[in-house]
Length: 138
Image (cartoon, rainbow, N blue to C red; front, side, top):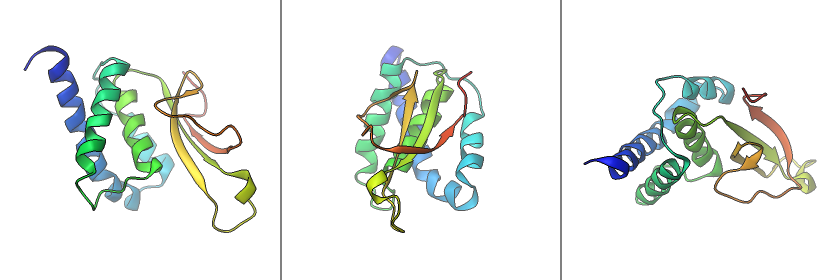
């Protein structure tokens, strides 16, 4: 294996491994602690295109694993970790849906932003941001 295929395959395996570990990591750490953990480690430079393709491949693989959560939180944590380690200064964001804000069963969403814009998805502008990591871009 050489070149972009090797990079994408390696990144996809990292993404899959991370998705498999996230449940346990979330059980034992708060989200800020987990994001600190996901922010550490060696830099593994890769293009945005390579990272996105690897994440898409990992999503396909996890679709066959019923025990792996497929929520926006898990997808966004994996996206944050891979993009951050690939050298892209991204921000993990969580928000709630304002029409449901007074209710106990709040609807929320998590995503990753690069340069203040959502990566890999459209985000409803009515969402109210409740948490972002890191707070300020480097």
